[in-house]
Structures are given as C-alpha cells and as structure tokens.
Length: 262
Picture 1 (tube, rainbow, N blue to C red):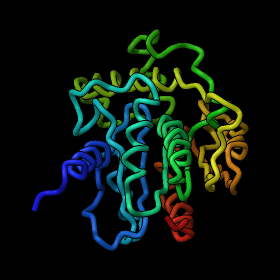
Picture 2: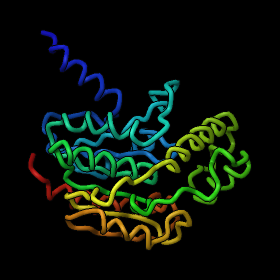
Picture 3: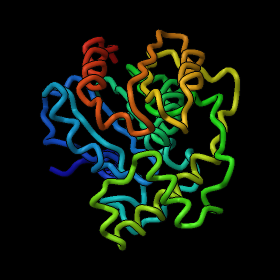
Picture 4: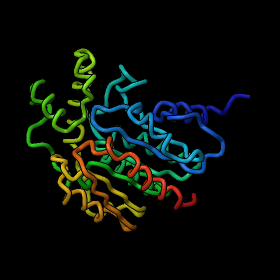
C-alpha cells in the first residue's frame, strides 16, 4: 500500500537533503546531522559512522550543487540551506544533534534556531571552526575577487586541499568553484538580532592555529545559548578535525548519551 501523498513528499525531501552514512536501523534513538564546510559535500563525512554508536542515525546534509545533487543550482545564502533542512529535521522521530564545520556551523546555528522556533529544539549543537554567529565577519577580500592562484593559496593555507587532489586539475577546478560559491554564502551571512539565542547545549570546537577563526571569537558561542556551553580548543588549523577525530567524536558521543526527549 503506497504512502499518502504528503508522506511521500516528505520522504523525497528527506532523501534529497540527508544522506545516511550507513544503513538505517529501526532501533535508532537519536540522529546526528553533519553539515559540510565551504566546498565540501556530504561524502566528506563518510567515515564518521564508525566512531559513533550503532543506535545513532548518522546523516550528512546534501547541499544543492554538491555530490548526488551535482548540477543543481547552488544556494546563494544560508537561509536557502537552513530553511529546508530545518523543515526536514523537524519531521524526524528522534532527538536531533547538529554538528557543522565552518560554513556548516553557521548553517547549523540557523537550523537550530528554526527548530527551536518550531517547538522542536535540537538536543545539542556542535559548531566547529567558526566564529560565533553574532561576531561573524566577512573576509576582507571577497572570494569573487580572488584569482584562482590566490584562492588556491588560501585553501592550502587552511589545509582543506588533499595532496592527491592537487594532481587532478579538472577536479580541482570543480572544488575551487564550489569553494568560491560557498565562501560568498558565508560572507553574506548576517546574525540578525540580539535575542536569537538557543536553549540547547552548545559544544564548540576549533583549532589553536586557525588563522580564520581566532580563539576569542570561538569562545563567544557561550553568548548564544541559555543552556550549557563547552569550548574545546585543539591543536591545529582550520581543519584541525583531521587529526582529532577520536577526541571530537568522544565529546559528541557523550552528549548523545544525554538525549533530550521529544
């Protein structure tokens, strides 16, 4: 028997926006949502599932124009990502935990804010390698004004380009185009109001040598929640995460244990 039209539409939207990093099980008691950085895709989180309990559904957001949605028109602002993601996540039947890296952290804050306003607050929010939303600053030079060489140098400085990718010029062109588009989205972000604070726990992560996100601006996530806040500063730059998966996922696992009931 087929599902009612409304349910079918919801399922299609969920499949469009969320990629399951491992086979789903009926026993899932929580959902961890992973939001990619500029130029990133859902598949960049493919190895996270092995670090997390089997009763946690681990999904990564699929942005338009990336991965399985290649060819679709990319988002031009964060609302175009946060609005549909929040709508999909509000319909899930398990508590939702949100982790976002860089651009993904700003998207994550907006998703959590929308969930809260809808009466379906996130169980926890984990921003990574991002200044707190209310102190976010656009880059001094717009990514659209950077030459290819300048953009490549910036990506290398931040550590976001695998060495083997540098040997594939065609793929590198695609990555740089995606980064340029997403960095413009990040630069266009505006916090939009002093009253916008979350009521869920916030657990922030960052690198002590991240030239894009000084530690003092990472610490200011404390000001954006009425709940508890932890800030974990680890050794490394903007992509400190590559060297600290065990540490980061251990902290996330701890908060997954403290699940807020629906």
